[in-house]
Length: 154
Ligand SMILES: [Zn+2]
Figure (cartoon, rainbow, N blue to C red):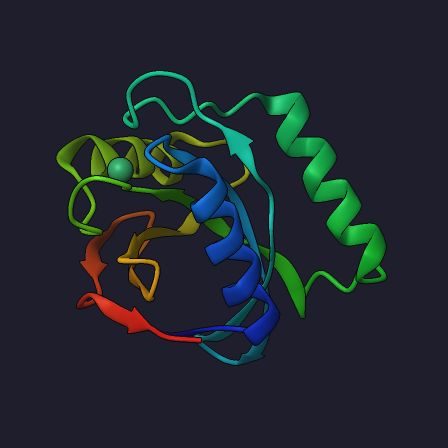
């Protein structure tokens, strides 16, 4: 699995993280499939999270709306442009997924109605200079794989 972040995505993410400060934020990520198992993240939605980061606030209406907007912008070309997964920030600890993160995402792909594959991206702004980033892939019936921490400069 290879996942890239477009340049504009990197700068938008950094800006959102700076504005959020120590507050956790997150949402969905959307990607273009460049080749089998090769994706480029090209958009993300941004929800303010309340309380514990373990609580992915998956309001179905909000998510459906973000997904519909993305499909409209990309011409309903689902095989090329689609939902890739979820993202959130860990402002004050490692960008590795927590046990709660893994449990929540596993539940999403094992029990979600229409999602059997999803990536969890976790980002953490470091000293305003770079982002630490991990990508964890979840697929129904398949062991979870977390990337090393990827350091993203501009
Ligand atoms: Zn987390």
